[in-house]
Length: 194
Image (tube, rainbow, N blue to C red; front, top):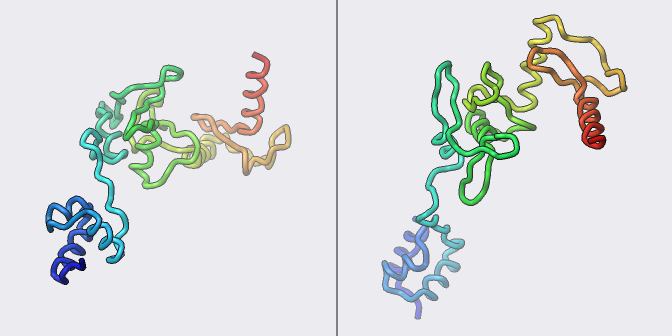
């Protein structure tokens, strides 16, 4: 049996507000199959799933900030858990594990990081302050500028093994340049030998 136009209008209003079929049943006294049929006819997709009452209502960016504690010098200390292997600050949000620095970086910059995220301040071992974090491109830019200022910049276009410096040049925290490709090759060889 078709619904009267006034009920259809009220139903469309409820669906536009994010109501589920069960909400429509309770509000209008119609059966669930009628609510589902009219949801399709009115062009509304499935109702958004409501979060479990046990789930956090915080976004992942908001949650990471709850696990940081401000310290002297504008640094922030991680109060959450760390991985056993290397002590990386991590946390779980909606059944998924994240690294704290990558999410803090995203919250601060508005973009996902490229490569590893590290603290580029005087407390790199433990600081997780979003303003102190850099990803690979940001770290390379900052350290390249330091290399120029300290006189460590090099005009070479390739390393001793022939890797193009424009693509593979990386810098130590003090601005000293090195070849990222050679470093990776040496690391692989060292692991293979062990």
